[in-house]
Length: 477
Image (tube, rainbow, N blue to C red):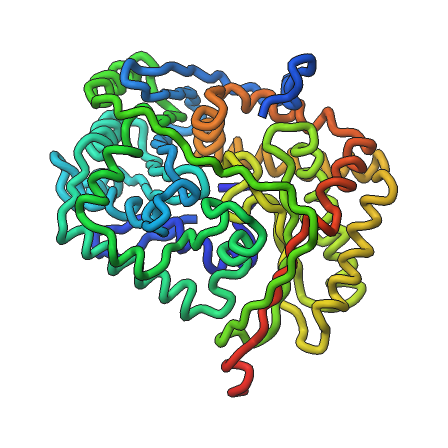
């Protein structure tokens, strides 16, 4: 789901991170507060009006319900507040590994029963690991809602984690790393590589996919402790959207999820990033890459601020679509590459993360062009936005493009985009109804604010440039 279809290099590799292990053990892939005197940037009402019901059970589980009878299906999402960022230092990749383990059966539903239930009803299900959450979701006929809630609750309370299943999934995840990163040209570029070069805080800069040594060293005790710590109801959000009876759904939620004990309070690590003052450059040799590649990234404004919304509109002007300034300069005018892609949060979208983030652009370019030559052109485009305000007309076009994508996410037939936004706003902001105020955040952006945002966040000292140099594969041609 996205604004976002996860694009370009992310489509090559990032989907492999979003795997949930199926019956055959192969990975299934999916797809700060403002000043007290000021209103929040998204405080204005938007054209979207979602009737959101929100409650918290006694055990801390946050429950969001949105009835909608236009399509006779229901979408269920369970989101846990554990993602790549806060996994243990000596267990890189553990959040993703554990996502797999949650598909290995539970006390009352052995391995494979979950898929039989969903597929037998004509539905679909999957899971993913992202920066700040791990999620599991199902889209099923309305009649299947109660059994889906029962089996999700059983998975939350009683996952069947054994040494045999742990070893099996360690092998599956290690194989994913080899297939989708180590043995894939541009396998970690730029979605996995760039955060490691651009960030200073280990939590934002480690190998999210996981070092093979760390994955292999995980013990059964580690896995069970991880579940007890992060997969408790007070660290989770349940979203139900679609064609269902709210009164019945409420009874089922209380029946199946209510008895699950609340876990210990979670103290999150400090994931803040220092202000970057000087440009960083890095190079990485990819032995499988047939051509060089180049990426550059800037640290984002803090999520939810006025500048955050302005940066999203700068993203539209800079790189989204063939009418964008970077596409016109780098592809149409100079012919450096056949395309240039990127945006905010390559593993999701501008809403479903909670912490430091990068705006990233990337391309695979012709070997006759140097990184210095390309970056000179990039500087010309970027400095243009830092030198003078965009016109009202260009800002209006950017806002129209962005909101069109936002509406498409909210109105998707599977309702997964809606569920993802509601879960993110509940998990990170304790406010799923924020979805009705998002449009106001973009309406508040002016050309003057765009200029101020570009001056601060698109400055050279806030940038990291990463080049990929072809290795052995080029030599063999």
